[in-house]
Length: 292
Image 1 (tube, rainbow, N blue to C red):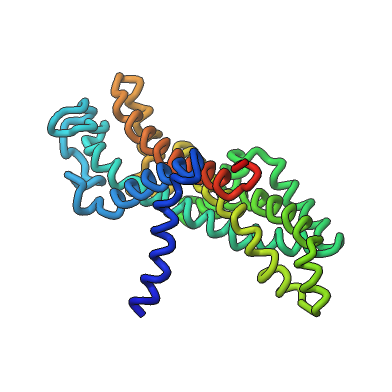
Image 2 (image 1 turned 45 degrees about the horizontal axis):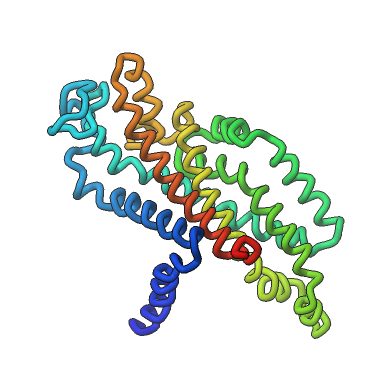
């Protein structure tokens, strides 16, 4: 069992270390993965490495500027901003991961079926997705989040509905091309059914594009989650969250407490930037045309 798990991990590790050989795209992926791993490790280890309880009130003077005691200062409730920055990524990462999972589980199968099926199935699905795609993303997410209410799951659903059409459109367009290629026609001629063709022949060839979309989708989800939380549609305010800290810190910014907004804003930019690097880098590494 141990040897089997090692045989699966080693190719992934070797692929990671060979990424810089792919040029600028590979280096972008490495940088992005490094940023995301550091932020993820920081969040997971927050109970151990955070100097204070991120939810505790009055651990220091209210709106205290950065100092040796509080390197990132405190907010107007006297909470340690450094501790909240260390622990505040958990909710954002949960929402981003769940929303991407929902997009994958719904958008990809629908795109496969629509691209492979006849007009009677493809037409209504494409019309529905185009209608959703036509809405401004943030406005649609705000409307859905306002109806569903607060919570990680509700927030993830609101964000997923916005990005499912992107998965659908990309997968559908690739299926329309792939289903006409000789290797697919050969499987059909041998009596291969629809599921066999879609999930054993076409789906593996679509996966690289899905990986790129998912990476960029996570970055967009991070920004959208921060925006929804800033508007008061996020998670429970008792939980540390970078988006809520931006919203709450803005009220102190007018009084000159710039640190209450700067540091949570930087964390959101770092996390979104890490996934953007991964997505843009993968698009170059996995796209033969861009390699040339």
